[in-house]
Amino acid sequence: MISTCAHAWCVTGFGCLLPQLTILSSATFQCDITGGRPRSAQLLVPRGLPRPHGRHHQPRIPCPAEDSQRSRGRSRKIPFVSEVPKLWDRNLHVSAVLIVLIAALWCLQGLLGLRRLDYFNSMLSRSQQLPASSALESWLFGNHPHVTVWGRRVAATMSSLELDFEMDKRLVTNCGQVHRLLTACFLHNGIFHLLFNLGYLHSMSPFEAGSSGAYLCTFILAGIGGNWAFMRFSDGCRALGASGGVSGLIGFELVSRLRGRQVRASLSVARSALGLLVVGALLPGVANWAHAGGLVIGIVVAMLTTRRSGYRAPLVPWPVLLGLLLFKRDARRFMTTLGKALVIGIQQPYALGDGLVIT
Image (cartoon, rainbow, N blue to C red):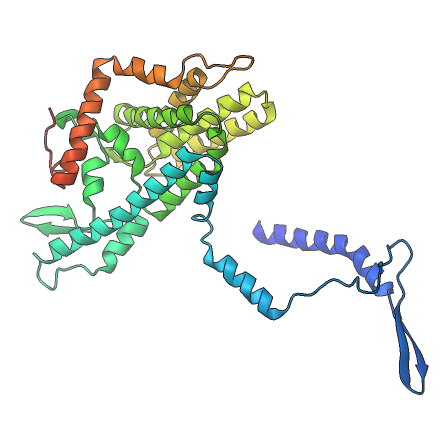
């Protein structure tokens, strides 16, 4: 398929350039020869082309030093990182903060995974120790090697962030660690998982304009709802990633385009959402219930908190929505557990992963 498309592109491109090449080939230099030397040179421009005005109309050709300086300037910019300040300058603060926070936590996962590997290597014999490159591979690709310590097999490179804050059905139901419904949205398993979700966040950042609060509210509630759907309906036990919140933002985009009467664009968004669910259902190891739950919650929240056509205010402003949710007992328990879990995770790493009960 790739070779066929490339061949068609080459034929089409050459066909488009052929008339221009014919015109240029018809332009010839005429020289009056006197005594074997050219007296003057004149460019004969074919009919239909505009003639240059003035004697010094020829375009300036940059010197090699300028080309190298421009290329060095472009090479200094990292493609994705250079876009974050632009988001901040465009007042898309929520998108910029989310991207920076998720990327920083992923870097911290790698550092903590290396520390955990050094800790286990200090208790193993030289023949059983794992190389430091194992931590790098686990950080980039999400494959955690296991070692046997004190008769127990443990993931040697899994950081305390993952163990204490990723989605885990057993710890949520048995130990009351409901904070994982939200904290798992900010952790990722490998660079490809990270770039996929950050790319989606960046592409949907324009919809934050004018509704930053509703945008952030949609991401948070969709992430919680997606993880709840994973816990209730999925056969898996553990999950992490911002896919639930990102799916909620896809629902936010769909509602925004429908209210802006952008029918064709909304159909394209709906097809993209359907394609995401289909691909998630076909690929192994994908928490597709989190995608579906996040998409549904995102649509509902966006319908309540975004501006309606012909109205200045939304149906329910996002602070009012959050206030109504906090009246529920389960929501207050969730906020209390989240605060306790953050303190415990900082003061006692791995305690939550070992099954500490939060009351």
